[in-house]
Length: 557
Figure 1: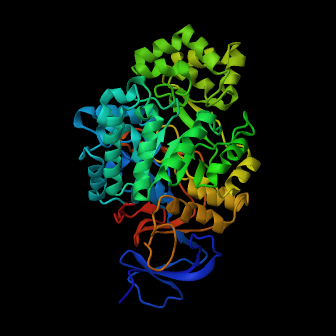
Figure 2: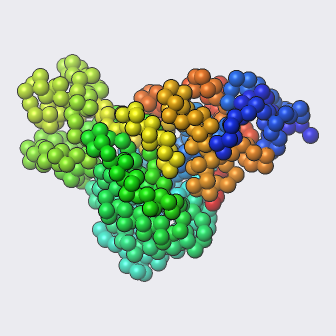
Figure 3: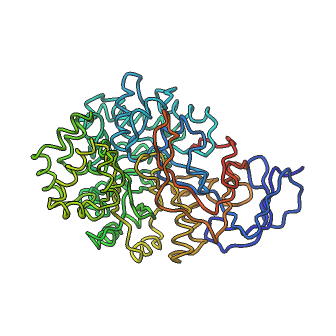
């Protein structure tokens, strides 16, 4: 019987870290059925001469929970060889959710993941209330990519506790009900649960995101849900100062590892030149837990964000900015930005920087007011010195002059090449933090797999090509228990990425597209060198274009 697809003459890197080899790959009914010298006939043959044939990449950290409602291909991930994505990170998501509390869920995504409310309001289809129903709705849409779901703790707490979830810990009775719902999600196929303790993660009405109020007793119970089933993983956004694991953060990680007896990953291990030894110190501190399966998670990209002053997510870590998120109308924000007391409080906050403390890395990207175009491309530090102002005043004066339409770029972390090579070479690090679907109007990091292969493998030699592929495939697949993904082997799912190792890559700066619901702007990261992305045996992306294939599955743990 003829194969459905035969990939000939490629260099196979199978995802295990084993040396590359020349081999053909035969695919039928969505699975790999032959690997080696394959002479069988096929309905279609792809000539992969001079190309690498690898397992499809697995992205462990995305926020596509809303985007899957309007974008079946889940772009731009498939442009970069990604075939499977994990949704529901950082404790925020869309299920479970009662009809009357949908705005709360959407506002949480606005504040935490910087997705415009108008986009969510137009695009989310709401065919669900419970978490199993959310997963069923995703499967019914016939996705282009494979989707794996973490159960985010915030909507679970809000579903049981209502508005009190944003104010306090759960009672023992409430904890038991939340744990039961998490168990229901796990039994439906969720691959674990997620949470956050980050102080910049503000939810509905400028109050702390609900999962930030979870007690240690709650986490003990929720970890026990995974332990009782012997499967699943936990993701937690932990480091209030990025790269720095503080004592209370370590204690929480230890509790989660102990209570669940399952893999735990935490973010974010970003290299920062203002605290040069942060990552090294944190890794030494966490060494006992890493030996028990804890995985620090990092981004392989220099972190550059394109931001605007109407949705200033990047400043949410600073206590003084809580006022900005309490009322996000333009008039209210204008009043705050003009207020001397607010500016003085922000100046004090900057003495203990959370996300940045260097105005030379904040550059004006775009001004709407024609008379202000002269400032585009300049740093706030340059503008302040030219005008003889404090940088805080220069920044907000410019914002007000442009009627809050000012857009700027913020360049913060992961800029030291030698330190990044050290981080990436550490096999304990889980590569991820692409944040696909989040921060859509300010950045796009979901193309990090091709950046790894082009920048860190080919240009800098930080890791070998075989190791780079392993870190993008079997490593995250194994972490989340996706047993038939992440490797090229007979009998496993036919998820394949084919790329040219001499040209593969991407820029860490995105391009603007206006293709969100309502024509809203998003940033996307184009790829280079990826010739085919194959999901369950069907080509989803080929020669620079989507094919319309919908062979993705909901991956159930």
